[in-house]
Image (cartoon, rainbow, N blue to C red):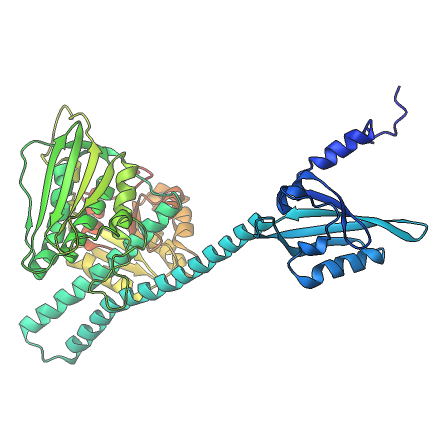
Length: 529
């Protein structure tokens, strides 16, 4: 039975074993006399100082870069002090300088210093990593500041146009043509703001891994046509014609038509933006090697070879100076790349060089055709073909913001609906019971009690008191988690703000198509956006 104390490790069996352990330790070790001359070193010290020369007898002061370091360390050891974590520069045999941490203590006999033991740890790599991390943090801070300045500029430009033209309209005296032009500019500027916000939201979702898809069988021709219809006005204003050969054969893929349409819209917007008046943008769609192939080619400014590898990176722009000719956040192509990759496809860019146009190519896996085809455009057909609300529907509209509430009330009334408004969840709950509306439209973020709490309390009511009223959430919180919370609380649809009137009317028409209300059927938890 061992007579070692419990919990104690076995000591070395011999002095040779101890020396062998110290000689191959992963940190530098050396013994020095009272004057600092080396008496013994292990392999790591020789590796640091250079093993090609004999180091025994040399003073440690020869290798420490800072003149006072050796005197400081030896002075403290001579006084019997322990040295912990002394940082210094150590000159190697090649002349390079390594940063090290030195720990040391001394052995005294009869009050006389016999020798000191030094432990030397190389921290050069650690310091380099820390410095690199600091530089990355500084770069990230600089990029954030640059991005915020760019974002401020991009938001203020269309907002400024809106405010200026609204001021001119308010002054009155404009002829009908001038009024029409003002309204067109206001609408175009508002659409620009909407695109900026959508790109920011999608970039945030992508970065957080929260890009949700609602896959279905999609005829890609319909997606392309809807995106081209939406881009045609901007192209016409700029004087850049859009051309696309109309194919007769459906091209089926499995995907989210809304996300695919967004990717196509971003490609078209990018092509139109960088193509001068008189140029052209051509769209082609075909199949090759079991894949759907979509090409967007323009005769615009092109892409320089140095920037081409970075075209799809976030916040990267070929010209990011304050004198650049085109606006944008550098997010459109970043969103395209991630949307396409989430669908199992790839997107690439080609350009002969600046001033010679560019071509973007999207490849998506083909899907099997359905047995029955209800429409040649399939799932990608325009929203206007969805259900329309019937006149005479009673609507309860809840929003604490008066301007937003009144704008929506006017839209709904112009489409024949009977609208009652409420500015708070408490007021709305009473109206649900007394009014028994055909449909409830409610904002989410409201002071005191929000829309999630409102719909939760509504769903606790009996059916004959409005507990099953169809409900749509209207919210500026448009992330996937926000939509999920709305559906779990009891809403059947989620529409992002700013609300698109066409989308809102289509959603109401789908939920209450015959003016009957009281629908108890819920949509998929993915909902519409």
